[in-house]
Every structure is written in structure tokens, then in C-alpha cells.
Image (cartoon, rainbow, N blue to C red; front, side, top):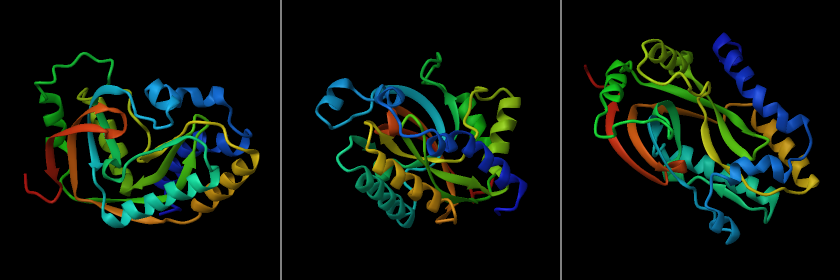
Length: 242
């Protein structure tokens, strides 16, 4: 897969953002502020960060992933926290981990949440055969965001997004990736920790650490960042017959 055009293209998209953490020196509080703005100020003060409320409708996979994958993600989260020590951070709960396939409604959009005709149409259009996502390491961004780098089989997710945008079924603003958000680092850390994080990130990207078979997708109504408050509107088993 590493030699395929799909892999190379997506790897380049990840590196456009991820390489900045590796090459531009340790991060500053100013750079981390956009991540801190996602959380309630009083919970940052008490060092128990809680995400702010928001309102989105999205189609996702995961929520939850397989136990095997969740254990691997937990180990990654714990290792990063071990490296940065007492530095404040937020880690996504294992039951809330997911891959965002596409957004139906962004927080700032007007949308009648009692009607999901566009979303239902999106699900009906989704190709019903299961597919896999291979995860090749993690990356950390200048704003403290930490993700697992997913590579969707035959660009399945990316091609589907493009077709829905062309059909004007979803907003044109969409992710270009197939990643899993793992959490946010919310304070600066030492230069020694920065160097250790660089080594950890680079080593993690050398091999595929997990393959997740996607057999179900869900349309969800998210009411708080990182799926802390979420309800499932509709599920679609990818092995089902139309």
C-alpha cells in the first residue's frame, strides 16, 4: 500500500501539516491557544479540561472501534502523556474515537435538525461493501492536536466525499484525511520532551500499526466537541443489501 498513488497522495497531505511540528522547533502557548479555545475556560483552570458545546451532524465510523484498536490508541495516549509529564492535555475517551467520513452540518450553519433528508440521502449513496483503514503512526500539530494517520483502502472515503460535494449533498468544506483525533496538548512542554516526541512520532510512522475493518457507518448529532455528547441518528451496516 505504501507504494500506491493513493497512499503517497494522502501521506503528502498529512505531511503538509505534520512536518511543521518536526521542523519548526518547540511549540509556544500562542500556538496552542486555538486548541485551548475548544475547552471551557474554568475547566482549564482546574486542570480538568472539558470541551465546549457545539452542534454538528456528521457521518462517522467507530464510536466505538474494535477493542484491539482502542487498546493501541490508549497506549499511544499514555506514552505521549508520559513524555510530556505534568503538561496539561486532553485525551479522547476510547468510546468516542472515530473517523469523520464527512460533515453534513457545521456548527455555524443553519440547519433544521428535525429533518435529515440530505444526510439520509448521503447514507443511501454510500457503497455498501465493507472496507479497511490502515493506520501508519501518529502526528502532532503546532496547535497541540494529536491524530492517528489513517489511510482508507482505495481512497474510498475521499472519493465518496468528492462525489457528495459534486452532487451538492454536503458542504464543500471537508477534511482531506482519514484520521482519528486522539486529543490535544494544551500547555508548552520542555525542549527535552519535544525532542522525545519527534523521535516517537517519526518511529511510529515507519510501519502500519493497525488495520481496522469498517463494517458500519453512523450519522450522528454531536453536541459537544470530541463526541462527549452525541446521539446516533441512523446506522448503516455496510454488508447489508440495498
